[in-house]
Image (cartoon, rainbow, N blue to C red; front, top):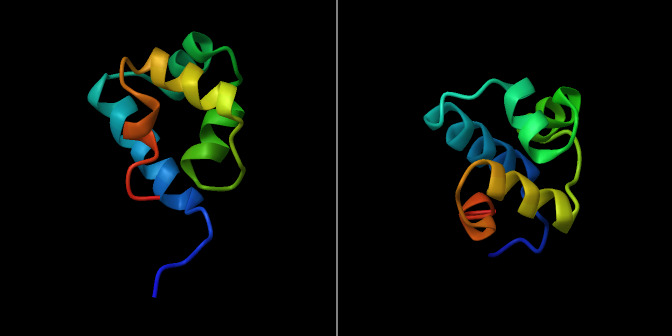
Length: 73
């Protein structure tokens, strides 16, 4: 049975995986995406939701598509 809830833990894992592939720290990603390192940390832990704008800003900073970040969520 498919769940209708958004899997923030998977989103966080996707962001973290892509960030590490790009050899970026949380602070570097935050600076590129226009948010704080704390926000990146919370997102990677699945501890907060993400706005559509921030999702696209993160994707841009990670040089990928937003759809790649939400894959499997």
